[in-house]
Image (cartoon, rainbow over all chains, first blue to last red; front, side, top):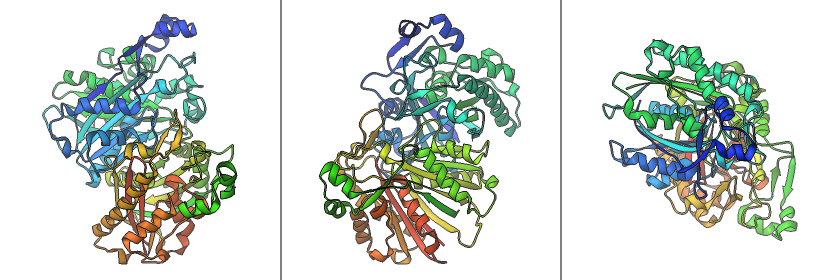
Length: 314
Length: 314
């Protein structure tokens, strides 16, 4: 299957580290040293997961190489739902006005982009769809505690959307050569390390060190697995786009894999942790940079725990 | 694919209509006349979506006809999440201690059971799984407003789990012959009629009449479609298990389809609307009643809107 086009939407409000210096007495240097984050975006009072998802799809539809009426599947992903019943996928279906196609939303925390794409792969394999919108959005600031000195400064808001087709549509399509997802709820402090309980405290990360260690283990491992599945090695890839959780995790991952920093694509410095949208926003930001024959590995890790990797080739 | 076994879990606390008579001055007769509901279950203070899901799976595993270690996929569904990051599927993965298999949770409101099964169908079609746990749970009382005189008395809590295999495992397996799901976010007041916004008011149903009308349109229509896909007619089915939203909706659906009430399986009278678990609980309650060759149609409708139907044969 093929990623035909990608878009992203970011709220306009920029929150610099000085905001958390004033609020929580955390210096910008300390935040940058520990996370790589300089600033992040915050959704406005009239924005939410669904409106950001719709904005990303609105931008996407301006560029798709076929009629939107050919789209026969919508898969959304978020762990910060505006509405758990009228999910972001349903909001997008209403926006695009395509009745009677399968529509669903998934959550596997920050890994959800790859779970959503794997669901699409399944619909294609069943012959139940041929062209899908995948839309990912996280509205972390709707659930975070900005006074939480452990994780309050990590989170940003954003959305991304892509169209994926079973058959190649254009020369610039990204061919998805392999995709692996997995749950790791049996590892470490998986079921308590990062939680978002809407009726309790919102998103909190009581065991950040366990998250860090597991992310730094799983992302290199599954990246290698996805390459092996294609008979390739780490030297065959041009770029790595990891989940944007923490720049130190990303540097650790490329260190383990033996990839130079020039091959690492990051946006956490400007956007913070935008949840399951982070990787997809990074792809959208760099889409025009990729050249024929280049290979990109995506790798994700999230609460739950959950992980995955995907190899694409231009 | 085949449903091998099904289980369900219900919290022990029973809430009769007299509770809502006292609270909201709604007579039991009025509630029964308008909804069919006599009583419903309410999760205890230490229970939630994840604990109910685990209980259903614990019961399920006592009866499955193969080793739990053969399970290679877990799909959860809920619109009333305890934790949107450590989802019910992840909680179940931790409980069953099966590392490194795909794990994800989905939400398409009260239709989610069929979306979850269709995701499993996709994993089977891709060759990425052969045996799956599907676990559905809704903890409506965690999000409802019991003083809401429009919908407060509708909701119950419960969970169900099933194992589904690509190949037949036992003589009593239910063969899934066809499955259709769809989003209907373009219909009526779809995106505002039933909403659950965790940061706002919880689950509310401002346009119950629109829900009623669309449910009574979509469920018969998609039931007919799933039969047509198998070259069957309504006379070929032995039972109908509709989403347990309102007994009047169920009666309307069988009226439209021309099915006698003896073929209708319901539990709403005892359990209220248990969300996406309702149909699956009903299947579990009646699993031993089905005889070789009998056919059962499931049909669902939920907020968003969303709908689906599935034909199984013993």
